[in-house]
Image (cartoon, rainbow, N blue to C red; front, side):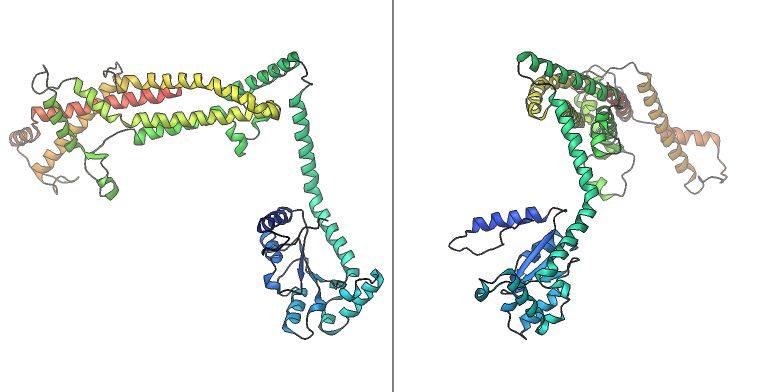
Length: 472
């Protein structure tokens, strides 16, 4: 049993406001523990609503399962008063309800300060046989019934908490054994210390190699279903980060998204990232005029593809920086977990400090690899021998010719007659002449369309190379 100081708010000659804060923190620290039984003592000399302890008890034990209320000094209340009736109601657990209920005690008053315990108990029993207090259950009044009541409460609490207490003790024993194992043999000499660090280094290397290789059989990795276990699986985390990176590249990698027609979605309409293909081709035609070299009319300067591609790749740097930070964060977390697992607690900060210093070179190497990955696309001249690019250009041209031919037929026979199942009479020569006239394309427009096709096709190739390169 811990007899804590009483809560108070006002400053007095012997108590300061700072001490009130300390007392409040101390009381809450003990009362919040789930194994603690709260004996909330209120004095009948003061208004019940002004006594803070019951509010603290209800806050920390909202269901009242481990709180027993205790009312003292009931003899200070005027017989028949509203205050007396309120405290009797409280004692009967009809106001503030606790599962353990309430108990009432009559303390020695000033006149009985020299009375023996026997005399005090007799006076208390006589008091509770009189007036309104006689209506309270005899097991809920007096010190004689409080002793067995507290014993029963303590017994029930022990029976309820003992299994979890044993589990906690067993867990602490396992932790202590693990710490002793990590401490190893005494390290009184330099050679002892070197042997210790060699052992830590060996265990660290084995676990780090295992998590990099995706071998998670060691007990350190625990269960993949747990948050701790999943966060220790470095290869899985990096793979997931790169999957997210590939999706980000697919969705957010293009600086401009070309649409054949603008959807009704207002957010897309006002976003500068989306543009009609026809408007984009006009921009390309304007750029071609400003970049003319020795090319023939109807063709385009090859450097146009490089300029268009670089503009299209602007988001790549930000996406690569994002995946870099996520990978480094995962590495740091796993490194800290492994060192904490294999080393004694007092040596962990020093070992981590050494690893952080070595980490600088690794970050430099990682940045160099990312730079090597991006450099050909952001600053180099577009070049590829991948047939995937020419296939995409041909498919884009075929798709555009199909759309143009379909639109020409639709205009020729009318939208209603173009529907499936309709029969229309046509003169072949007239049809050929009209279709030829409708599908002719200006040289500048054709060159703009072709440059756009090559830019998009080369972007797809570069996008795939960057995504695969990041995994390597």
